[in-house]
Amino acid sequence: MSNTPHTLGEEFPGKLDAIHALKAQDPEFARVLEEYDDVNDQIHRSETRIDTISDDAETELRRRRLALKDKIASALS
Image (cartoon, rainbow, N blue to C red; front, side):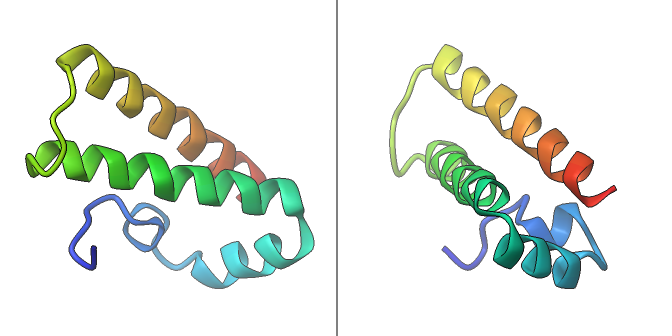
């Protein structure tokens, strides 16, 4: 899904090199990135009506994405 919003490049402009370097050094960070991408894809699929999920489930996915984004931001700081 090349047009998925909230990609790491959009959320952390200018930080992709740091993200890639940290991903290569830290397996836990790499796992968080993978989970972020997975959750973000699930939200996008729900928003575009490819997959139908409840509003509560979509809200929970958005909360997970925000928590993961916070972890990524913390690791980058």
